[in-house]
Image (cartoon, rainbow, N blue to C red):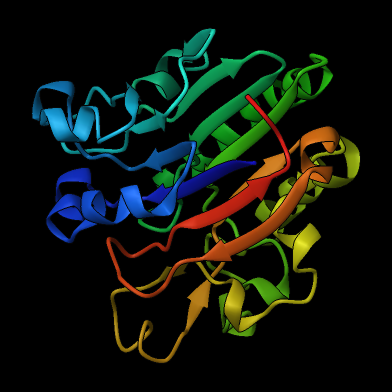
Length: 260
């Protein structure tokens, strides 16, 4: 069995202060994909770089205290791909790929467009340029799992207040249609939805820090494991951990009948 966890940390140092590294060994994960490190290499302690049983690989943003992705793995990868080879995207530390035999696992942090019109246009630019890369991964002959904070709720059942959010980034028609292209045109599989096609309130992975969003479970499903057919068909169980909070996101865990 291969267990993969994906979690937006909203700052690795903050998450660690809330018990993330104490929780991690109990999960028996093989791979843990991290997003929004908000830290440079020099900011990471040895425990953050190499938690018990794991080695860590990271793609940091150039800007201090911003973005960044990582992957903890119990297995040594055959190859590490840091970034997409697109300068402005790579400067924000948004893509990291580890290859293990025929399987590739990616930690992805898709930009948020909610803070300003400028950031929304940056998000759209990322999406436009990332779509062909997803097609190349899909056509590579490899099995691939792309884990991460996609910053898009795909369908109405993926967020609590969908009616009032139709003009807000994260649930815009253009964003939702882009995800649909990944699934319907390119053939990627939304693994959580394959296992839980009708889940509503239980599917959320992010809650605003404003108001009583967490207490009232006014959430969004923004975190996905999106996979090629072979490995997606091997998915056996998916869960979202909500017993403790390490950030404004919850960890998404999926078990695959797969051996590295």
